[in-house]
Image (spheres, rainbow over the protein chains, first blue to last red):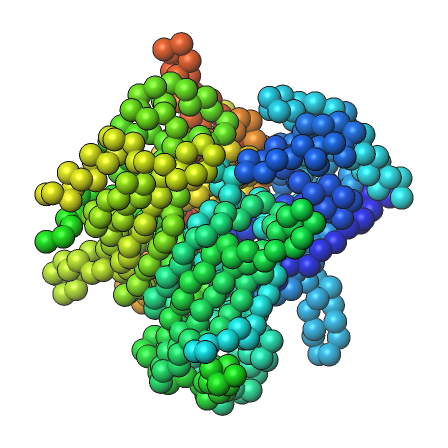
Length: 159
Length: 159
Length: 159
Length: 159
């Protein structure tokens, strides 16, 4: 098995996420996927998904990192929509590791929902896709993944 | 005391909520306020903030309501910004009742955050404002508030 | 007459702006108002509504300004919703000057639409509100308005 | 040549589109792509990208269509990010036809920008991707493409 679910996080659908078609606007699924990556890193003690954001001194945080200055950007993204997500839905967004390079890695993410049909709960997949994230330095040039993040992903790959 | 806090809900700030100024984009505070109103109604067993949304049969839900067909729209909104909200902030959004009319009501909402300064936690107000919500029927005409919702607000006003 | 319309700009409503209620989500009106303020400043040769944004060297731009370092933030905002805005609407957003202080100014903004009823075009007001903008320096402290911007607003007030 | 650019539309980047990284938030590129598809259909006299939206009687519009009831949904989407888009950028979004099936079609979309380097204008590609759109009837079941839309895409494929 090339990859394995290693993190999931729930998000509620609010009216702001929907469009006049009565369903979650297709670009908003991608927001739920990013929120989940942020929560995954937070769960690992990495508070700032976007290191280097303005408005806050990040020196202290950076000291806790083996490599001090980096950020992630999405380089490629592929998503398939399977079922509409609706107002009030409780979505569960998952992360699995697919591959890990020197300066980038690929995650598989699924947006799921528990539907209750005739009293039976059934997990359905709302959307799924792959995201390739690249690691950049402060000059927005590619750089090697920080070792703690590489370790995180490689552990997931070996599970 | 004219009104009283009766509900609060936490929301995390994600990168999608921020802008190039490094802070939460000012219109997004209003989204956090609406999410909180939705969670307040949900906590009272009213699942659909927007009754009548497409994509789902709401018959069952409507049967549970004393009056079957209504939705809320924001008629007026006033907001003051006191402190910037930042990436990763855990915001706490509150609701207080201000007044209740036949077909509308007014809420006071605050967006707050716990800042830790020199080891001491201090609650700061990020933004605050008043929202006037009007109740509409299926034809988008004003209608009386459903009695359970009116009771909810009047109880809060008397506390 | 205390103020006068001095700028207007058209924006199309797209599906992303709507919600499951079939109308433009109420917080999105505030985005249309800010886009219009940006276009107003651009029309005056002030390219960056948010001076100091990351990702671009703003030195050259700043040289063209009488005062080199500032940004605007919304301090207060009040909006009333009169008519729903719908998918595909062509909205016209206007700006009028209300008052000008040393470090802030107040604008009145209207979101309008031309409805055709029985072959007659009628301008309707979708929403209207006041926005108080404060001028900040690079340390996010209040500072005097740049003289060219103050002149801009005072001219509008005298018209 | 398997496909050919047949439509393009300009969009300005506003502060709402950016994030704390100082660049356009990655999910927002997908909004620009959808706005362009809406403008393409509008340019062909098809006013409602989402036929069947609430809040407006669409009977008259539907009469003008060879097949009366349909909407499009995004089934699959793939996007690659090449260059960051920034505040104030004027983006040009293009559409090319890739393939046309009975109930769906695939478009290639590019987000481009004219950069001026040493006085020379150079068109750069900010992002590019493919979108598979499926045609649904009022019951959200797949249905054949309306003949005028199929003709539109097949003409583009033959160019």
